[in-house]
Length: 336
Ligand SMILES: Cc1ncc(C[n+]2csc(CCOP(=O)(O)OP(=O)(O)O)c2C)c(N)n1
Ligand SMILES: [Mg+2]
Image 1 (cartoon, rainbow, N blue to C red):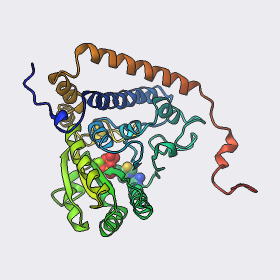
Image 2: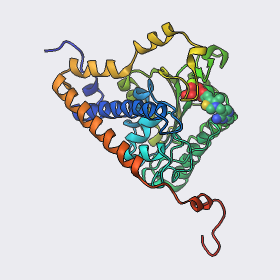
Image 3: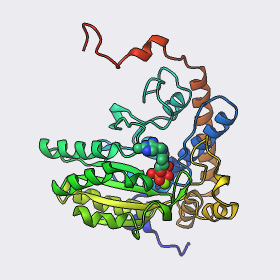
Image 4: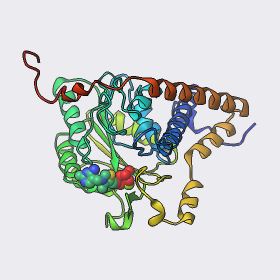
């Protein structure tokens, strides 16, 4: 028997639930890796990665009600949208900019998530614009007496935008059921954390808006789950918003168009890789006897097959008609 403390049972998570969380983390990582291959092979135009942020994304998502709550994700949140129900095939349809891409019908760059049926709010390219949207959803829920919450995520660099301060102030004043999670990967493209903010932490800012602010290890999905679950309970109890800062790593360049070797060293990257949550969470699950070598192999095979099938289907799927680019820009004559 293993001597490792079973933390997930203490949090009320079953073995099946933690395995599901691990599966989604692994799926997000493997989709992301495939995207880079496709990009470098000249098949898809752009990648902006979730690698290094999966634990924060999945820990937070599974603490919500995935059938009722709303999310306003940012471009790195592949793990979040998968948890909310976007399929692997849909993610690849977006990457290949095909007509059936649920996010935008193939018009937007990858990473601009939005899917109505899964309550994923459509985002825009200017960072942090999603925050007031999530606050708006929380306001609507409160006005309608609906017992739901919204989650909004963003990078730490984005927490310097005006939308962050206006949105959180409004949420604090009106005690809205919105959870803001900053995924602090310590870079805003090439700008390191110490050149972005001078306060000790982003979480410290919560006090200015009358809400609790917590900093949490974003490489530990269970710790993120615990803090977000607590925030969710408070949101549904009418106790208002919470600010959470999850400390994460960005294991890739900013995007497929960036060269991070120009501003960070191999040693720094190596140090980050040592903290990879995919490795530590897999180890935890083995230590508590939830995951075995055999199960892990089967899981890898299942995910690889799913990704191969989705890549092929998306590559062969039709593009949108050229005139579809005019849809939803102006009101249709005689239409809605
Ligand atoms: C308002 C606005 N300014 C600048 C940009 C260009 N831009 C895109 S991502 C990014 C960095 C954001 O850094 P951070 O919030 O830390 O998120 P990360 O990419 O590190 O996850 C910038 C400056 C933008 N999209 N919108
Ligand atoms: Mg950042």
